[in-house]
Amino acid sequence: MKKYFRFDELGTNYRTEFIAGLTTFLAMAYILFVNPSTLALEGVDLPEGVTGMDKGAVFTATALAAAIGTLLMGVVARYPIALAPGMGLNAFFAYTVVLTFGIPWETALAGVMVSGLIFIVLSLTGLREKIINAIPANLKLAVGAGIGFFIAFIGFQNAGIIVANEATLVSLGDLTEPTTLLAIFGLTISVILLALGVKGGIFYGMIITSIAGMIVGLIDAPTKLGDVVSAAPSLAPTFGQAFAHFGDIFTLQMLVVILTFLFVDFFDTAGTLVAVATQAGLMKGNKLPRAGRALLADSTATVAGAVLGTSTTTSYVESTAGVGVGGRTGFASVVTAGFFLLALFFSPLLGVITSEVTAPALIIVGVLMSASLKDIDWDQFEIAVPAFLVIISMPLTYSIATGIGIGFIFYPITMILKGRAKEVHPIMYGMFVVFILYFIFLS
Image 1 (cartoon, rainbow, N blue to C red):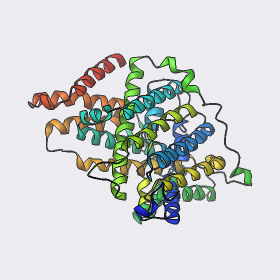
Image 2 (cartoon, rainbow, N blue to C red):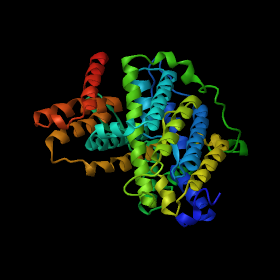
Image 3 (cartoon, helix red, strand yellow):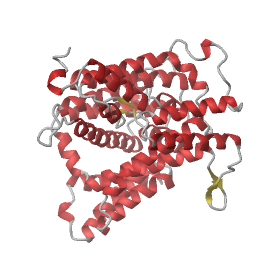
Image 4 (cartoon, rainbow, N blue to C red):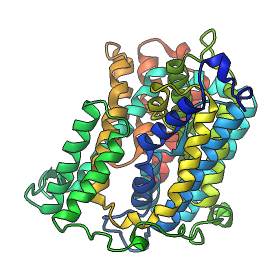
């Protein structure tokens, strides 16, 4: 075991890797409760014919998808990187595909599965480098920041801090509302913990907020052991639905949905792999060893997650928390995967993790994702316009796909007008046509 994971070569041991695996789990354990709440569209007034997913089944699918993906990353790619259903992609799945487009979640799962299969093909060929090079770096950064703004906006809504207003579209909510006050308390606690450098601050913030909610009577407190620990919820409501609805994906709208799933996962994964490997000192000659294996583990996890019943599974930048305490090998990921399996038996806690409790997590994740704003080249107008439109359109149209589409349409236009047409990759011209057709179809 020590030889396979190269403990001596990387200067680590079982104790260090175990602590690293546990630290990474605590840093990302919030997804076990945020993902079911998001995919169930909890707290949202659903229009007729639109349904959210079963929270219990999504909880189980989330834990299993995270365990499978993280185990593959640890054993096959041998990296201290954990995976789970991704923030941003779950919001796109629930709020854009299901709520806005009115696409059944079963069909959306089929779209996730297909995007994962395409990702597998790209991981096994040299096409992934061509696609990475085709999308300008500034637009990749803009997409990440835009998703951050969108997620934070959803968090503010779920907290009741931002509400609908007929005159101004949105306005400040009633800050004296008890549930809103609970969310504000949770946000404050989470900010304090993270500012102090506490690993897993988001997760601990949710726990403290839930306890506070129970003390003041806003959340029903567990009264017996069965309210905390029980058998894992059944996967029956979601398992295999991606296969059953595969035939429903052959539309232009679903094509754009699949491309969005693929695009965001592809570049989010690539960025996370480089960031974590760089921090761990695992990069060699500015290249990532075993990159193909890592991407294959990620894409396989996406397919497995879709079959189980959850949105796209991707690599988590929270893995840097484990690296920060010494994690250097895939054994740390094996430990993290084990904790996700153990978490399966704590599904009753879904009842005390309400939308007000998860709202601060969404806001904090939005803050972290918006950090990419600083690296966009705002001095070049032809770059600034499409980047800005990507970022601002996502929260304002309540759609990640729309934001990407608007930016990808304006990018070739501004580049051509600036005399830089030859710098635009043919794939970007192809995306220009696809998104023009997409908006015509939507109208």
